[in-house]
Length: 338
Image (cartoon, rainbow, N blue to C red):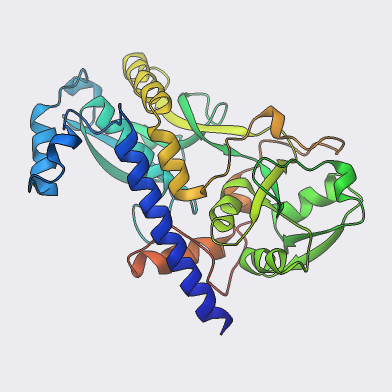
């Protein structure tokens, strides 16, 4: 019965989320969809294929053939180590993919994807790499930012609420056993009790039920799951977040400048906010003000992949098979990449 109720609730959330995204996209005056006039297309019988063809025919680009591996196409590297919601394992789907499409559209080119295992030789196969932090690689320059990497605390609280160390005293924090989050909690110097779970879904279900007071996990895997459960939001991070952007080979100054300019556009015109909302719901952008006061800060450069709950990725894979692929919350098994 619980599984049936959870599935029904998840499907309802998906429908609401899809509607919200559609409304938001329609409301964006500068939405990065190329020169197609959405208002002109609405209700006139134009098919999606025709709209895409019209956009492709009318667009222009400043990228030259010698700046790209394939003329007219931005070849995007997706890190094979990434997980939901940045990248779903079952398909080229996730926040990384959505941002890459928006970037390519703003640059006026097509978009193709390749899997890369790291940055050292990635640019032999692609033009840019998604999900890169400043300092990850000496030969990589990072353009813009579209996601944050941090250990985050979630609770039954309204959006915008921020926890303090005093709030944690005597409370119970759920973590995935064997994860980076479990080690981070031990290092944070809180007065909270720890409760271990096999996977993050179990932890979030316990949080919703009131069995635990908080859950500690990677910010984006947590935001991805929080969108499924009622009344759960992010209430702070254990350290200042690191920022994920688009990696470009450092010596390719011209391409970097154009990618940076395009990322600035999709960040300022509202497109990026819509894309984030699709994957982490209403979770706010994380910054220095997100850090929980009064705790021992844990290294902010925590690999989100290491803490990302593989169960959320497995659930996303199951959802993708079912044609949804945008939410987590129903898988029953997990292993932690850490």
